[in-house]
Length: 433
Ligand code: FIX
Ligand code: ZN
Figure 1 (cartoon, rainbow, N blue to C red):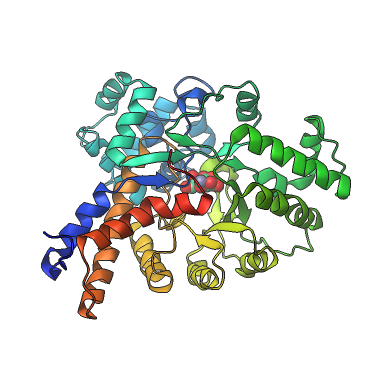
Figure 2: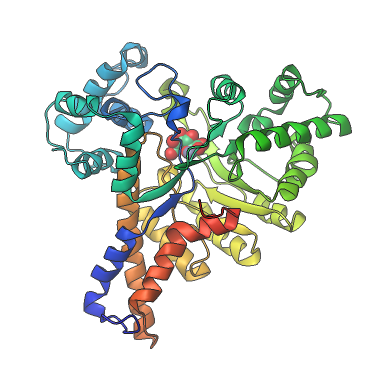
């Protein structure tokens, strides 16, 4: 087919699917780590990979407690088991005794299949034997190749003692070109007094009363960690009650206004706000115990209005916030909606949200991030999201052709490259690596 030739409607779906599948993705948000941070099953290894990690993903733990409620399998009993024992239990409960229909279950199936394994085994032993033959560093290349991911953005928790110590001792001094760092500062904004006390311990002369001196120290802390991590952006997840301006949390308000915003602006970095998690609704489920809540979009529009020279990457967890986030983005060019986060990362919701974003924003948004916690999940998260993106794009191209505009292969390639890779890189000012 010639580049300039419009694609006939009957071949459109296949062409779009082919292009979207072949397009390399730059993944904006994951919890995957470079191997320099250590890898599972070595204790303390931050890079999680392999069958036992895949099957004990917190989404699946929560689902296992629905299949067998806590009066059948008490939480303490489950947490007392080793990781392989937990994985065996989840496999039996969700994949053998029941049909693995949920998105998280299907994800394990897709991942195994795309790795060339048969996902119909009764036990995990055959998979364990296969994974035992992999070595994490080379396996990262294999997973990135199968998933079609060219860069994995990490989430680097400066308030985790374990991770912070690794950065301080230079475990990651030689940057891994497959990964980008992100300075994640949840505690500073969500538990400000405790975070300021920690900063004090770490040599920053903060004071519990947030005055000019403390603001100066917080700026120094942020700058030091920007220098150390060289992050693609700074990130925070915020409760659904987040507001700005914030008279209920004056210290948080002051830190955002006088420390975070100026430092980000000076360093040319975006702030990623992940809004709408309600943490610890069921602490007995540990990582799986967080829920979602509807947030107030005026926090986002007020930030954009107050800081016109700052850039904001925003994802919101509640389905109810998606339309107003698109509307807000139409008002502020410095606001970039991204991803279908967590409980929205399901085909039906990705489809709805992506369609709405295309209709309201054209291609000026970042349709998805994987949020992979376990390396292998990159495979299914992107496989499933690409399929939905291709479906929605096909529908939109067909509408456009019906309206009289020719759509060529080159147009589709340009759009896919921008949506899956270019937009994120351009927004955060990431050069070609
Ligand atoms: O805060 C976050 O980055 C969330 O994505 C995670 O903490 C959450 O547990 C998750 O895995 C969602 O997909
Ligand atoms: Zn995340």
